[in-house]
Amino acid sequence: MAEFKKRLRRWLPTAQALEQTRGFAWLGHYLREHPRLWVLHRRGFALGVALGIGIGVFPLPLQMPAAMLAAVALRANVAAAAAATWLTNPFTMAPIWALSAFLGSFVVPKAVAGPSAPPPVDWQWSAPLTWPAALWEQVTSWGPALLAGFPLAGAVLGLTAYLLVYWGWAVLIRQERRRRLRRRALKTSA
Picture 1 (cartoon, rainbow, N blue to C red):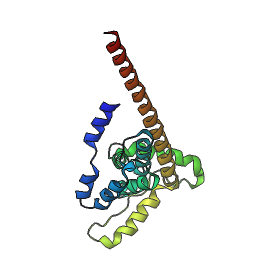
Picture 2 (cartoon, helix red, strand yellow):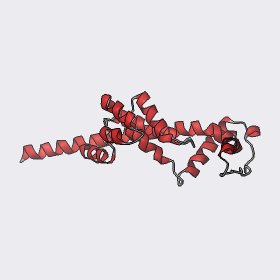
Picture 3 (tube, one colour):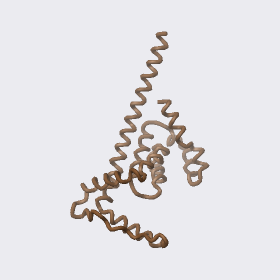
Picture 4 (cartoon, rainbow, N blue to C red):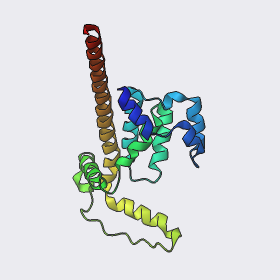
């Protein structure tokens, strides 16, 4: 477990590095005062990953800051929450949206589900004042089943991630304890 934590610490930024990063200085200062949000322990790390994945499912801008704020509010590992939002990328969006639509179809009646192929939205990129209306048209064209499925998919994926990380961490702890016992047994027998 100690080796795994050392590798994780190399990848994760420190509170001091966040204080020097533009836009995250407030968070670095907060983390320095509340180090429990930065410590690598099983519950906090698993909760951070779950929050990051659960929030990352929503097709919103600023997923990472939202996950970090949720991690601060729920006393989870902030770095894990920020990193877990990276689950959503161009390669994983289609399966996540398919899961969202599938789960939403259980909640939304078939009569309300909407058309299977929404018409394309005409984005006028040269006119920024039209963007909010175009965004609203895009969101409503997705259909109620997909929109209802986003929170469900976030909850399912977040809970699954929490259980996998928590269980995986426990397995790593057991393996580390077994290694230590074997080393002690070898030292005492020699």
